[in-house]
Image (cartoon, rainbow, N blue to C red; front, side, top):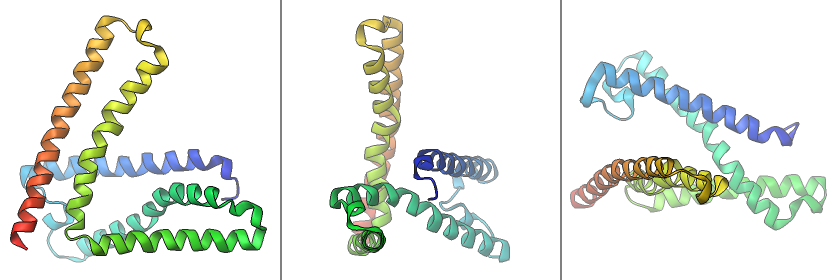
Length: 186
């Protein structure tokens, strides 16, 4: 990046744009197909050139969105290796090696684990409740302070957390059922 200090702004904007696209596709798909909606949504479409174009677009999206997530991990690794002190040419080579190496390790893991997509769904079912419900509530209460939160507010936060955990529990159970079915059919 020309101005690395703007990374958080660029990253946040990219994630917001991606989330908006996902919401539009999800709402439209459910509106059109109801509970018969398949994932990815293009499985519901006839096998014509627009569907092929949509699949190509989704592939390009993943190719561009994936590195956004890998960059943060690569920056941590690079910081631990202190590559910024190795000189501009060595720094560039080390960065390239770390990023290609990270992608290859992820590829190896994806190829080695059977039913990798189901395992990723399980990881999402286990981590999303923490990221979406627990962490924001805990941070809010920590920043505001327990004593500064009224009982109705704490009760509302507890209800929100309980709701999130129950809904996430349904997703977790469904993911486990899919993994068990995948192993049985193997």
